[in-house]
Length: 92
Image (cartoon, rainbow, N blue to C red; front, side):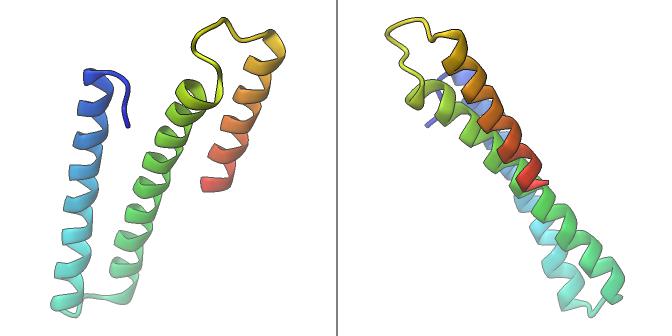
């Protein structure tokens, strides 16, 4: 899925942080923590997942939708950037 070793490492590390955040939610639920604290922890997880989704979509657009065998036109680059920006706004 990722296209460089560095990118793969970043996505894996980000996923591991999300797993840690989800573990916090589980602990809060197990200990019947205050609802507001639990809701905040869930919101943090959702934000982290949305950011991860945006990053993976960004890579997909850049490496699979745009033709990597030739230089994209300015119009294609602008359209890809517009789509990436729209998705980021949607996922916030």
